[in-house]
Length: 484
Image (cartoon, rainbow, N blue to C red; front, side, top):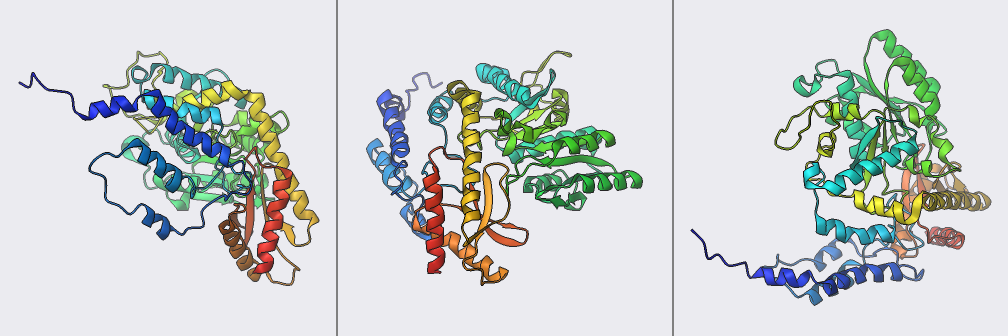
């Protein structure tokens, strides 16, 4: 027997690293980043290609530990400068937030506690807080008593989980015997997020059983949905779910949820709303009308790590009836999930794919406590107002063309110059324009394909971005375009 086993020598270093001064050294780098990214003259992103960045880290795995000073130096010199600076006022690219500081400062506490939100006994406070935050969000969505949900890694997992619940409602034996030779179909708008078709393939339905519904003004056409549902009913084909979008990725457009919910009610079909991006409009008195009808959905995906500016990852799934989500996962694990019949199950592992679940609820809870729903609503409204400023500027300039009028915080447009180039030439010009502009470091935008054309795209979700920044970004794009 090893009765004289001594603690590992590395314990001394671990205990030394637990000192507050060491923690402050790491946190100070994050604070320096927040401060440095206020400077508009600094680069927004890297100009180095992947091979050059890879060479910087081309080294063997360390056998012995290194000093904290050397590690902090490398973070400052090798990591921060060439990362994307989402907090820079001229980063208006993807739907990834420059995060709220209070939520960022919560992350070390979350990591230190290292709770697993699979079962209550592994995370007592985290579990009850997740239920509380989910309850707040259900209230905002208009869901009544008996609703519930779970935090997820993001909208893709939330939509997948919702559609698993929908499959359980239509095919209650699917977990045991599969979907069979004649699986049900799903319907979604032609501009739906790829998470919908991915889920269909992963759930065993097959891509052929996802029926895209044509759009009108980049939104699902309710008349086309009605025709499709009527035809499916006449043919005897089962429908698993209709997926509507609230805040599409390309244009930020909102489907008419009220009309779609009415059709789903008439046909007895599960309605899932992908509000990963647009769900935060529920915080805003000015914009919550865009989600009229969401309270009639069976399930809703919502990402706080988008318009609520929570650090990734922080997604969530809300369900109008918590039992629908419980039924989605019929697997039993008696060594984990326990509860008496009729009692509410607190364990969130019964409602989620993951077993080891990080307590991301802490940062969401802290952000809500610190900034409040009204504060987050103010941010939401500001971002939507900024997108309208971009649209107004683009409309007034003859060298640009707006592809749509913004409904939220996203705008697609393109550079057209003197309008002498045809569409194919403009596609190539705008493709090169975006790449050259981002490499300049003066700003950072993204692009997409819309209505068969390659277009520029901006997402306004940075409280540091101003009207002056918007004009400077357009001026910078025009200058680079003329050089091409």
